[in-house]
Length: 503
Ligand code: NGO
Image (tube, rainbow, N blue to C red; front, side, top):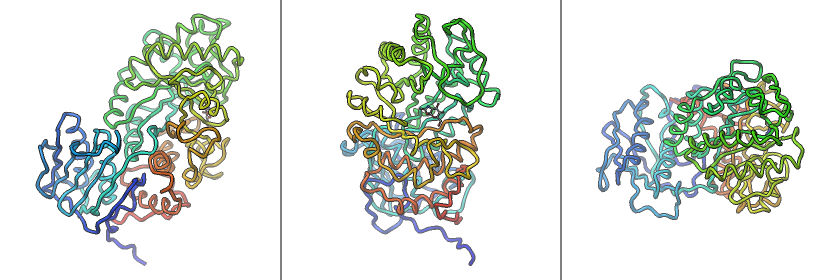
């Protein structure tokens, strides 16, 4: 049977994450070459958001859509972005989208809400809207109203740039793809045994020596502070907060190799290019260790507009537990002295956590102790959200220590039911890490991240009661053509009947 060339009927049914409320009215709006984007209460920030949308629409439509200031509703045929008259109950990221045959109106209380709503507009247009070259229209959208806001404040992804290094353009592409699914935190794992990836001006060898290796012995690399600031600003323009991690006291071979004086025996170990964990430790007894940490956190805090610094704390297998506690309590004080909130992997629950420190659950029950102390929890259960796990035993890339994670496994769990003693109120949100021991290129990243990431985004955003695997599976199939247009090297999982790109 020949594949039909007609475009799918416009509807609200293929959105990911699924909105809180959908009310279709059964007509269509058509975006034409006379349309513009009118922005009310046109601050620079609001106009930037309008321009962001125009930049997403112009390449594929071939139109010259402009973002223009307005006071009041524009004429029919246009897109109207406004912060006026919106219900503040929708919160900082919530929005209301009303589409009639005449107009598209996106209303949000805060700019972040407009930005999230723009992702919904993109998904309501045909998949070909994400092409970089002009495509045939018509650019039809279904009509009706969507009211939407997130379940959890933290919807994140983590990229390990330490095991393998990824360039600034790679990280920006990762950010763009996160933005499509309304994610809002990018956790960068900036140091590990195999590499130190950011310049610290007071300890220059960290990047120069510690940045010169990678798993498998590749050339490594590092971000200058300017590169890092560029990433942070790029993310900020997409309402994504960068959360930097410097892992300690374990996972520190790259630092120890860069400065002999950081080692208890004053001998610098060789650079490490294998994938074992748990063998390195900063020297807990040395005062210099804390001077080092203070310097690093001070520079990192100055580069970080967001409130968080992640200090790792996982798998400190080469550090005695009493020493670990002494160390971590000092580190917590250092982070707070630099006016930041400490985040650590759930092992930090072994210390006396000071408000507002945050623990990240990955594979033990320690997060429960953290919640018991009143700390908020980020849920990253390895067996569900580790994007470095293989999809199934035949996946060439990836590890499998936490099991294989198919698309359904990745989707079908609930953060509030995952760990007894860690309830909805204790949970700040969900984050999916991509560790990169086996991941070397952007193509590899895309293959492991897609199509699992949209599922994590939905778990973080959509009400638990509205989630259903069969329904999600159908919606995800319609994202195949979108990901293809975005040139994402996604895994064509056999669990999904991928929709054919019909134009
Ligand atoms: C663990 C370990 C990482 C590994 C990862 C591989 C945590 C928090 N520490 O997760 O160093 O890269 O597994 O899956």
